[in-house]
Image 1: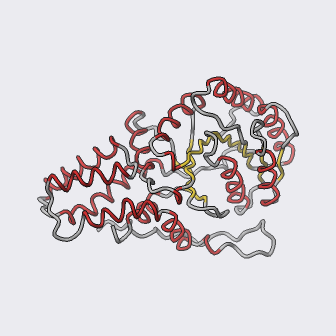
Image 2 (image 1 turned 90 degrees about the vertical axis):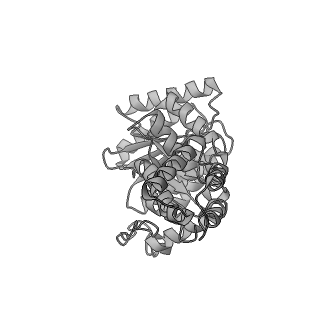
Image 3 (image 1 turned 30 degrees about the horizontal axis):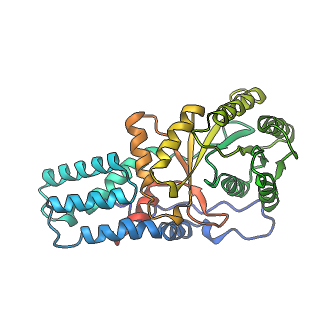
Length: 342
């Protein structure tokens, strides 16, 4: 039997060497995180998992009506048309090959197919290859970019890393103050001039990081729509300036996506990738949408258009807490999404 419907075991977390005498968050255990992941996906589970439970119920026959209803469920959960067609075509083939007659026999096959789709993008970010390791974050307004930076700072500080934040969003009035607040909350320094060009701010931050022995620089940039061509050109300039400050940087370009945008996330991935060469994704607000299937759409679409070159989904966010942004794990995600009740 395929054993991924339970979260895979993980080693005990390393002691928090940066938080004084405060005990590690109980959610750092694999069981705690899995429970929060499952809770965060409640809306998607109700939309997808709940309806699948009825579809794959005992006694349901494998007929055309079954496949049509399954198609509706998957598309309405933002799995996307092409990914849905792929899944259903493969389920049909499995049913014919194995001689299945009842829908319940395909339940595990669907979970296996979802896992196969998601595994190629489940690649943790290695920040040990450079020091300082420069991470540039981009995204549209409201995607949760600045908040994600704060949570990423918390994540890496708990690993004992020295982190520096660069307030490169010089357009949004409250962006600087918001990032400074995150810096204070995480006890990390923030390079945040009162005014100035975004590229210059990040340039200064990289030089400061090299002088201070910083491990990771998280560089914020102004939110922008892909249709705002002048702003897209400006963010290209930011990338060029980063490379001048430290040849070869940025070492990671993270695109922050709001899960609530659904299929529009695919257009954002293409636009920002064309402009910057995106190397990783962060998907936020999964707890606020019933359409978490967009992860499958992203994985399938990228795999189809760029075979062998998927953009990894580095982190997902499933809540408002500091620890609710964690590395994406395909096995845990499928288990939390479908669970034993799907």
